[in-house]
Image (cartoon, rainbow, N blue to C red):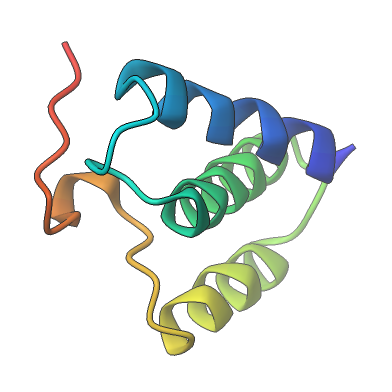
Length: 77
């Protein structure tokens, strides 16, 4: 179920940017994974520790896990 949420969130970023270079596919996947993990944590489906494990792993791989900090400056209204 986490992967379904992650894929849905990824599509949000890619659709909102018209699949442009404002966000690369891998960046959208990473952001989608973090958003899905956050939703799952908020719904008590995963623990805070599991959420942080996912987020920290993606950050250690060099991904930005906060869309507001994306170097291409995503703008969502």
